[in-house]
Amino acid sequence: MSAPIDWHARAAALSLNGQAFIGGRYVPALSGKLFDGINPASGKVLAQIAACDAEDVDRAVKVARAAFESGAWSRMAPRERKKRLKAFAALIADHTEELALLETLDMGKPIRDSLAVDLPLSAQCIDWYAEAIDKVYDEIAPTAPTAVSLIRREALGVVAAVVPWNFPLLMAAWKLGPILAAGNSVILKPAEQSSLTAIRLGALASEAGIPDGVFNVLPGFGETAGQALGLHMDVDAVAFTGSTEVGKYFLQYSGQSNMKRVGLECGGKSPNIILADAPDLDAAATSAAWGIFYNQGEVCNAGSRLVIEESVKDRVVEKVIEVGGAIRVGDPLDPATEMGAMVDARQTERVMGYIEKGVAEGARLRLGGKRIVADGCFIETTLFDDVTSDMTIAREEIFGPVLATIAAKDIDEAIRIGNDTTYGLAAAVWTRDINKAFKASSALRAGVVWVNCFDHGDISSPFGGFKQSGFGRDKSLHALEKYTELKATWINLG
Ligand code: NAD
Image (cartoon, rainbow, N blue to C red; front, side):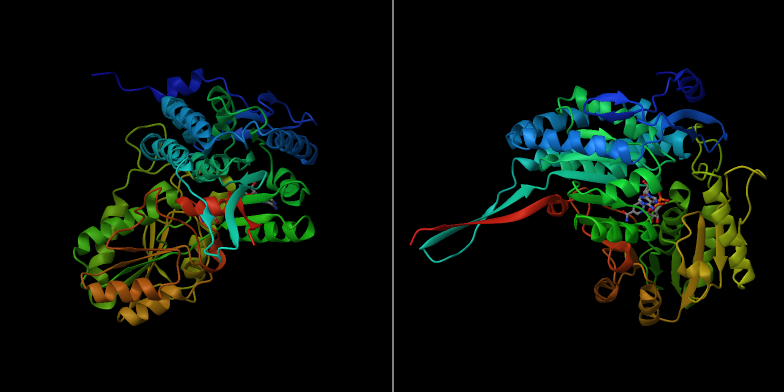
């Protein structure tokens, strides 16, 4: 048996690169400006990161455009793109331990999750699009015999991927897989809280044979690098994952510039509905606890509103408290840790503010509610009971380990409560009655509805939102629609 990994020793031995990756090489920001990448678990500076801004964006867009026009990638046979993307996926898998460590240091999630979830799913995602791209056919329209209409999908050109910090590598992979498979050039802008894995990907993409200029990484702030990408006249599309607030900015940027395509994967306030006839109430409650506390609650589709049929509410809440209270919160580099640090001090303050509001508005605090160390970024697993839909903690996305439980007298009320939100990313219903399951899954306005499970999925199944959770889909072949333009070529045979 191999010795357990000493993650702290590995972390101490790291030498970290914070530069941008443009045109196949690492470069500083043109201004020379840097910002601190901070480990939220210790509060210490991890690395100095290049603070790219509008002039770096301009440089990267020119390089990405030239690579696209050269055809080195965009006109490469799909089978060859597939080979190189598969090599890219294999390199990500080969570097699992290194990338998992970077992810955990940068944003505070437990190393066990980075290793078991983020890394394998990221590699698998790139590999899936690689495998798919030489099997996707175009169409011929059923016209009269006097014409042939070829309906083809063409790559867009230069696509910017602007991603959040909660699953830095995985959210990037959901964009990069279909963007690159379709033949586009890409500029990846990681969130300023979590630049390290994105930066590391640059070298791996090069090593995999992705031509220079096709894959670029620009670390920097949202208000500078992010905005400049959104406003750039030669960026053809933005693939965004992040908050609804910033998603709306990207719609404005598009209108103020070149009407670039915008795909938005935004926030959520997902209802997890447990009916009295759930097949196994304890299993449902256990899943509900993990559905909010996994990844410190920093999950877009977290089941942050637990809607429970009145007759079983107390029993379910007790079980959620038991499971949630036993979750091990602590050092993200300890392999036994199940919940790590919040991403930064600002997010910690924000979540604590919501907890205070919950108490002030009259919800009953039944679990947690405090920081674990007075000034640190660790928050206890927290549950509020007797929440009503008008309370702030039931309406706004908290993005932390805070669960609101709400009683419903029957399925109709549960569905009404479930839909009483501006968001529509995900929902779940637990029942052994197929008719109720189908009724709820049809009535709930969300991009995915789980029946008798929570947060299950596969790269083959689309993911994305209704309402203000955004539009366009990540994952599955549908994601290719965001990164291609439909062209009809009408050939007159008459
Ligand atoms: P955020 O919106 O603050 O930032 C996301 C990205 O946008 C970052 O790269 C950031 O630098 C950039 N950005 C910020 N302000 C900008 C501006 N003014 N102009 C241009 N770019 C700007 O989100 P976050 O705090 O990083 O992530 C949390 C949010 O992401 C939550 O709302 C969560 O629900 C959402 N999310 C959604 C999904 C999904 O698939 N729907 C997945 C993960 C996270």
